[in-house]
Image 1 (spheres, rainbow, N blue to C red):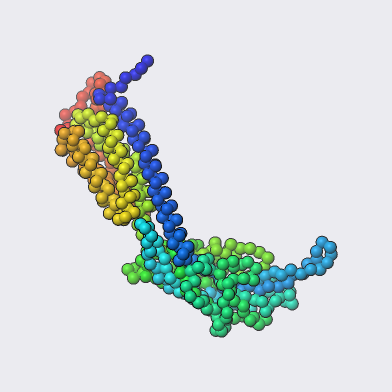
Image 2 (cartoon, rainbow, N blue to C red):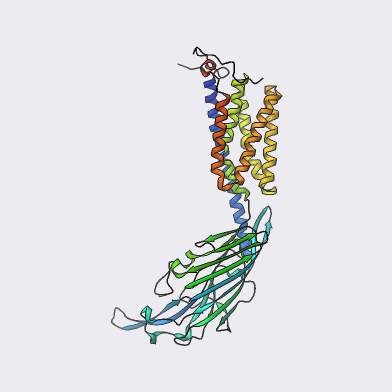
Length: 447
């Protein structure tokens, strides 16, 4: 048996249609979220392309002392053979000083952070202890000892690099003959004297992008970084022991012990993930419009719900009739807002884009409401509701740490307002049922 629903006079039928429309609008809203991700991926590709020509994110580790030795063994035929292996030693002390000068570069509508950095690594190696590794002293090839520095992107080397061994300058070469401990970096032969330690100094001038990281290779590692960048993000496994961030930039310092990391001071015939212990600074561009636009799309159902509820209450309390097509057009405008926000953000920044997009939406919906309800008062009520909603959401987006709390309180307050406005409405009477009650005289009437 067919069931006919009178949408003009049935509150339940109208509510059902409104809910279905709201859920249907989530489909284009999710498509816009996909568009945001696509544009962000395009931005990341552009940033990577710029970094590939200038210098990508840099990670610096070392120096590492690698010393080859000959290991004797008996093969399957019973013959004695030798194979060259490497023993690795890390500094007893490592002090890192770095000065970073970032700048913003543009490609089309996208921007990224590039930097020039001056880095000084100083410290001391103790005499290599092969006995602790179970290696015979007469098998060590002391004349082939090398110190190596891991540099993640050699394209960022701006000018000459200096390595000093006990204050004596050494010839710098690409990393090689170190057993593969450093695959991308620099190295230098060191004239080791059997049983003696030495001091070192390595000065680097590197270009890079996005972040600069270091590895805590010393038994005790201290590091200092300074820059005129005002929006640092301290990243990696260790946060600074001290930091200052102000209008002139930032200064940060770290102190890391061998016990804080997952690899020893010396080893042989083993592999460790040295880069897993990296620490340093990301040079971020604040207020990423893509991230905030993505967060806005997550609230799409809330915006649609509140707008539709506002119009539904106008129907109930103001005794007006709004057609589902009119709900659909208003919902479409609410969804197109996110497309406007994204496109304008790429050119003018998020705050400006939000102001322009929300103002355009409010004006259009207000004018449309005025036209089909023939009531300036009701149109301004809708304008006030939308202005309050978008204004409140902008504040929530700025306060990232309190976004969830602010959003939850906002929804709670809105539900409370809806309860207060409809507290005298007899929904049974509106549905046409005989409940013995009528809408009380104190009910809110909107003309």
